[in-house]
Image (tube, rainbow, N blue to C red; front, side, top):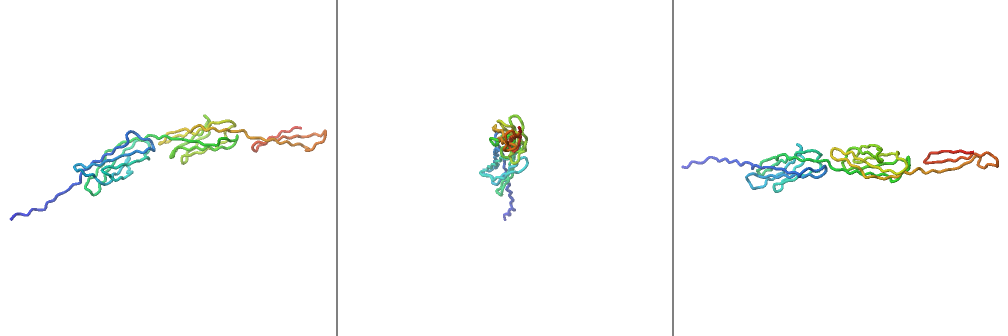
Length: 239
């Protein structure tokens, strides 16, 4: 009689995969989208691996993106300035493909440009408090230096990308005002366009009075002139 064969054990191993990531050509500036594309290939089989790719930036996982036809793309516009390393790790599902991680890709984010705008009243009176309002690129931190020509009027820390300075130091006459943004680790500094303002002299009024109010011929009379300007008073007397 023929001998019966023993059980045959066959092990199917997960297909080996290779993951690669490519990033933008050259550097990007802060706030500019940077796209990183991962491809996952199966070694020894023509089938496309399925499952997601986890993108890691500087050791921190930032996104998990499903594969479509062997590819996945991660885009970020929030990377801080400086150098970064990006990896893609294939996380296989149950289709028989092995996990793999790409070599690290380096990417540099440079400081982004900023814009600064300044607003203020077009006219004011001498001694009157004027509020200067400066706004920088969204997300900017640091300080604003307010200037009258080359003369600094004050330095104010930005709050929510804006800064205000109240000043009564503008003398009568024309002025050219500026707001200079200091910049920060992500944004370069910038200066506003010149903003003209004319400070006018305070209007005055004169009133006359005499004592007595109805003098007779030959009587000594005191005449008083009162000059008023923005709440101040100066008296001149003559007899």
